[in-house]
Amino acid sequence: MINSSAAPRDESTRRLCAAAHLDPEFANAAIREFLVEPTRAVGPSPGVDSEPVLREAIAARSRRRTRDGLLVALLALFTLFAPAVLAAWVLVALAACAGRVRTWQNLTAKRDLAKTLRLAAGLGVGALVIYLVTSTGLPSLLDGGTTSYRTVPVQADDADLGPLLAVLASVVFVLMAAVLLVDRLVVWALVTRSFRRGRFEVDPKVGDRWPHEWEVRRKGHQYFDHELPRIRPAWNGQGAEVVVYRGYHPFVGAGLPYQPWSVAIPLHASDPEAEPKPFTLRELYDALERDLHDLGSSPSLSPSNRLRDLAVFERVVVPADDLLAWIGDPVSTAVLPNIREKPKRHLPDDVVQRIVEEPLEWMRYFRCFQLETWDRDLVISAYLHLGSDRNNLYLEWTPCVLLPLHEKHRRFDEWPAASWRPVVEAFGKLLRLPVTIFGRFSHAVTRIRPIPEESGLLLAEKYGAMVSLRELASGETVEDYFQRTDLERYVKVLDARVVRSVGRFLEDKGLGSAEFMERVQQVVNNNMHIEGSVGGNAFIGDHNKTGDVTKS
Image (cartoon, rainbow, N blue to C red):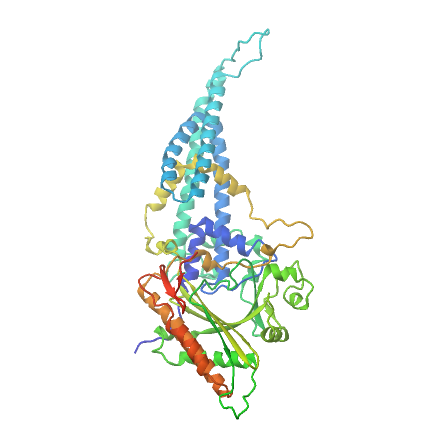
């Protein structure tokens, strides 16, 4: 018998912990989004456990800053000891890096690299000037008003320093090579041993699996001891979750909208001689939730019976700029009672009930149905919003898909533990060091700081969440044929059950459901069928609109 009750693996968290050490841009973006703004809301983060990933991002950035600070100091010493060698080294580094400008397609990256190359050329010229000045002597002052110069001859004692300077330069060069090599070996040990499938641990109690492992993985954590615990899920079973967002997309963490639809219908009694039963929106939400939960009763309906794990959340969604614009309003105060702290993560039931029955233009209630599949690599979320009076019903249904991690964040699983690759990478970085030293200097001395804010001015960017860790690292498309078909399967199954549940609820209340079923059926029948790759365009909905489910 096939055992389908095994707990799903958390591959996304493991891979993103590795990505923090392999991808500096990802680590910096994660810290900037989640940790440096003390008032920024913590958005939902399905498909990953955020706290372990952020801990690795902090450690990775701290390790890189230490490495770059050492390299800057050592290269400065090398410049004093062997400026002529440095000038030649710069030429070699320029030759090694110049070809990258032609191969990069990103124009901004080209401009940044070109700027770095110009700075490196200036470094080489400066080193050459230092060499010429120190080797030929310093210019004397003008003598007797003439325009000729005299040079101070090099003394015998100065010439005796040549061998010593060569030795010192060699020692410094070896130290720079050692710093780069140790750094690459540490990263290699992390991704091939610490983050290997089946061995990944987030608890230092397991002990070091290689020398100083947890010392490396805990580096820099003390600077964020206050912020890290606030990333943890804080739902206590009471009240709806509040999502304060910035930007256009309100469903933070859910990924890309996928075949959303809405319908509005008039309500009328199914029996003209019988009075329909009144109902509240809460009743309809709860009835739909119970019906969708029943999908997990059939193991054959979904692979590995994943529908059994369908999670349901109540969410109130608020745009950050409107939240600040309504400062002082009782509802806004319930979300943001203190402008110097993060928005509340949950609202009391009385406020939620008001938003359900009387939604505001800038504050909406949703019931979210969420399914994590494929070891948390593919996440389907569907947001339901309802509105009604005695004569009308409005239903808004927005499925979203969180695409699998980008392929570059998966490659390390194929790397062998024993390899010469770290040595080769260290040699390449040493070769290009004079070209990269300006970026390293900037990285070593620059802290990621909060957005500056003028006194009395509140910025939405400081309060609203915009992206989750999974969205920062997600790819452009699904990775597997079965993932494509499962994506369509889950969305269609949820669509069909919602339609059936609403129809049955209306019938139970003595209301006609035929018109509702007829209008929605067209939407369901015209939902997109996946042809080839999810990354392509396809026709969606009842008006044959063209849509794109790729990551924008």
